[in-house]
Amino acid sequence: MITVNRDSGVPPPSDLLLQAVDGMDRPLLVLDDDWRFAYVNAAGAAVLGRTVEGLVGRDVWAQFPEAVGGPFEQLYRWVRATGTSGSTEAWFAPLGRWFRADAFLTEAGLVVTFDDVTERRRVEGERAAAIAAREEAARVAADAAASAERAGRHLMLLGDINLAMTSTVDVDEAVDRFAHLVVPLLADWCLVSVVDPDGTRRDVGRAHRDPALVEAMHRYADARVRTNERSAPVPTALRSGRPVVIQELLPHHVDEMVGDRATRALLEPLRPAAVATFPLLARGEVFGALTLVNGPDRGAHTEAELRTAEIASRRAALALDNARLAAAGQQVAERLQHSLLSPPVQPERLELAVRYRGATRGVSIGGDWYDAFQQPDGDTVVVIGDVMGHDIEAAAAMGQVKTLVRAIAFDRLEEPAGVLRRVDHALVGLAVPTMATALVCRIEQAPADRSTGRRRLRWSSAGHPDPMLLHPDGTVSDLSAPVGPPLGIGWRGPRADGVVPVPDGGTVLLFTDGLFERRGVLLDEGRDQLRRLVAASAGESLDALCDRLLAEMTGGGVEDDVAVLAVRAHPPTWERPRPPAKGGEDGPPQVRAAASRTAAAIASTACGAQRIE
Image (tube, rainbow, N blue to C red; front, side, top):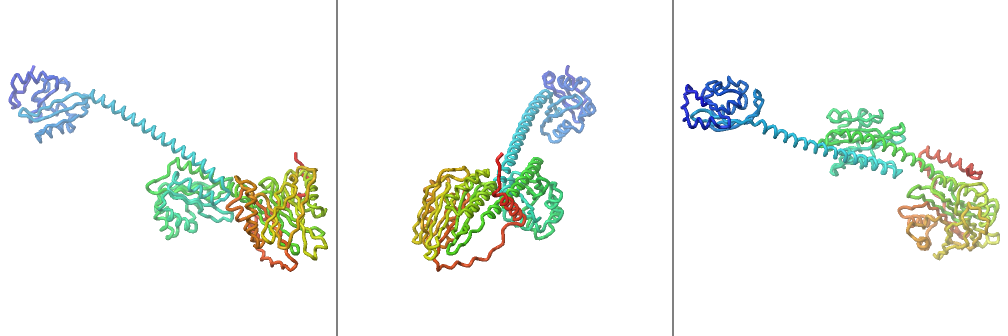
C-alpha cells in the first residue's frame, strides 16, 4: 500500500510512479524541508526496522537521534545546501549495520536511496585482514631474516677478531686490526685505547666508515688522551671495569667528557650522537678500552650491537693479553739467545765478525749459534752450528751443545774431527734430547810459521754446510771435506778433517743454512747466489761484508734464523781498528732481568745430565 503525506506541501506523484517506487527492492525515502518523512517505500521501512505508517510525517532526527551529527546528517544537509548529489558509507550503530546512502535534491524533497552493505564490508574486512596478516607475516619473516643475517655477521666478526688479533704478537697492529673490524658493523667510528705497562694510555686503534672524516678523527684522537676529564667514558670504564653507554649524547655530556675547548672544537665535525665504551678486561686486568661512536643518522646503539661489542671487547682483551705475554716471552727468549752467543775473541792479526738474525716468520728464535775462542796453545777455534727446532727449548739445547763443544775443544786440543766425535758421545751419554749440525774449524799456526805469517785452516763438519774461503783476488772456494752425520745420534764411525792454507787478506766464511736456503729454490741455486755475492764483496771491510750478506740474501724476511761468522787473516803490519763506544743494553729492565735469570739457569745446567722419561 502506498502512503503519501498530503499535508507536506509536496505535489503528490502520479499513482503509476508511486507504484513503481513502492515496489522497488532498493530502499528509498523522501525528506521534506522540515526533515520529515514525506515518503518511504516498503523496502526502506523494512531495512530501517519500521513501518511505512510509523515513519511518514515524522521527523527523521526524532526517529533516529543517533544519526544527529553523524555522516548521514552531514550528507543530507550538504546536498540540500549545495543542490549537489552525494553519497556516504558509514556504520549505523542502532541497527548494527553498514549503510551506503545516496542523496539528491528534487522538487519533491531530498531523495535518499540506501543499501545495507554490511555483508560486503564484512567480506572486504576479512580480505583486508587477511592481506594485513600476510603482510605482517612477511614483515616478521623479513625482520627475522634480517636479524639472522645480523647475528651471522656478528658471529663472523667475533671469529675474525680471534683470527686477526692472534695472528700477530705486535700489540699495536692487533689493536688497529680490531678497530677496523668493528667499523661499520657495530658503529660509525671507533677508538681503541691501550694502557701500557707503565700506565700510559694511548689511542692506538682508529677507524671511521667515512673516508672524508678520517683525518678529523685522527686530530681528535691525538688530543683526546691529554684532555679527557676523569668523568669521561674511557677513564670511567678503566676505573670501574664496566661498560659506559650514552644512547643520546647531549652537550652537557660533551662538556663532562672534554674539558679543553680546543679539543671540543675538534670533536664537532665528527657529530657524535651516541657513545658506548667497553673495558678491555682479561684475567682480572684492564688493558684498555673500546669506544664505539654513532653519528646522528645512525642514532642509538641497538641491543644486538651492544651485546656483540661486549663479547668482542672481552675476546680482544684476551687476544691482547696473549699478544703481550707472547711479546714479553719473545723478548726474554731473544735476550737469552743473545746472552748465549758470546762475543768472539780477537786474536793477534785475525779479525772476527759475527751476525745473527732471527726468523721473521713464526718464532724468531732458534738453535743457531756461533763461537770463537783460543786454545791454550794459541790456535783459534771457530764454531758454527744449528740445533734442530725453533723455540725456546731449541735455544736452551743450543746452550748445552755450545758449552760441550767449547769445553772439549779447549781441554783436549784435538783436531776438529776428534772434537765432534767426543761431543757426539757426550750428548748421548748425558741424555741431552737434541740433534744438531756443527762445523768446527781451527786456524793453526805452528811456531815456525809465526815469523812467516803462514796459517792453515783445519775443519770438520757434522752435517753442516761447507764453509767458503774468499781469496784476496776475489775468487771464492768452497771448502769441501767428507761430511759426517749430525751430533746427537752417537755415531761411532770415522769423521774426517779438511785442511787448506789461509793467505793474508783471505776471509773464511761460516754460516748456517738459513742464509741461502729458500722455499721453492734449489739448494745449489741458493749457494751459487751466495758465492757470487761473496765474490762481489771482495775489498769490503769484514763488517760491511757480513751486513751485505744479510741484507741481500735474507731480503725482507727469512723463514729460518741465520748465523754468520767471518774470519779475516791480516799481515804482521796490520793494526786493529779501535772499537766503537759500547752502547747500553736494549729492552725494559724486567725483560733484561728475566733473560739474565733464565740464561743463568740454563748455563748452570748446560753440562749436567738430563734424563728423558
